[in-house]
Image 1: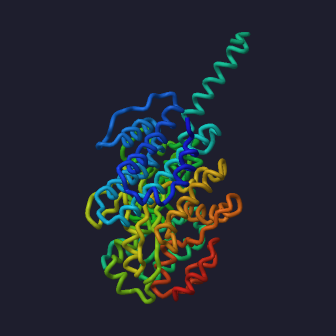
Image 2: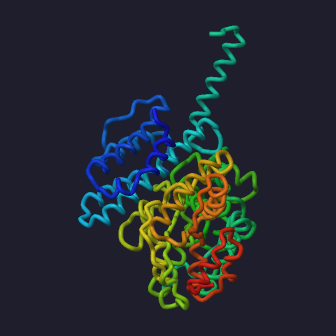
Image 3: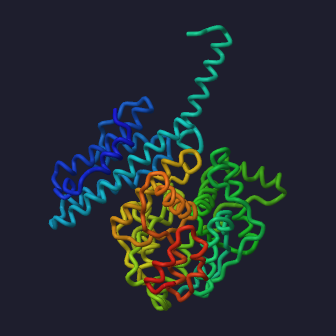
Length: 157
Length: 308
């Protein structure tokens, strides 16, 4: 499964020609990539990504799922909404230059979303500083305690 | 011009006494220029920031509540904080004390141990420097006081995350209309700088994360986030990113340099506190608003724009 950083790299290498097209396919690709980025966070937490939508978008449904019990995840809520906003404006924009500009902004927002979630995953592994890492640290601590207890009892399974 | 917020208690917080001294200087200078009075809290303490909050959220509530109590004891019903972290923490303490019995009990116990009276919710209102200038002066009056317009300066307004999040601790926001800021698309800084003549660009990352919390543990992540903020601002046509948070501002400056060194990505956009831009528009010199104290050297751009 590609990491958010992989997504960020591929978004950043998208040519302006692609974004200039303002096709339904490009808009859909941007939103689908946003979904995949959020899925990577959810899957990393051993959960199944929801298919539910919120306000008509699966991206917002996934964000709600990812932010459950993790208020600091709301730091990317506006990025998700902004991504949808820019894609929507591009869709109704009749001037091709303006539409392309909105798609480029959407790509920048998507890139930020990927970098933000990659950072949170990285921090979760480091287990320091970011408040979102706290539940993972607690889980790890519980695991280590259980391991130590079992180990002391001679259980090597 | 209203009488609201003309004289308020001032809580600068630790950052403004250190790396963000230019924000402190420019905030005070702008206030003076506009005839607004700031009275610094006596013997204030750390708001609890991120570190204390992560270790013990209730202790953070007490630390922020103590500052609110000092403001109350000094006879103020409003305290202004320019730092997003302090502003957020004081607002959070206010919310927790109004809604959570356990927080009230902890603050009571800690206040007793510190031999002080506990702060009671609802006595002091916390505002940001943006609220202060916008509500005390207003954009119409500000426009009249501009001596050196920011005309021709293209600005991306960057608010960071703590000015608007979490939404429930800012009940005055999202009320609709021009007088209530939005947590999705904040506009108070845009309004003030537009009144000062700046040309605001559409910036889709106004409240996106600057990576401040990652700076020490994972610098590469912070640098990548900042680089995206900078390149997006440049793609939007901005010459300057206006900031209102010392953590964001210093992060943008430091990681701009680091992005060039580590990733070989050079960006030219400059960073200035919104109070520095307002101060220069009001006729203060670049030195008076502490431009020379910023890490990002914007002096040649300001000179070119007739603002130096």
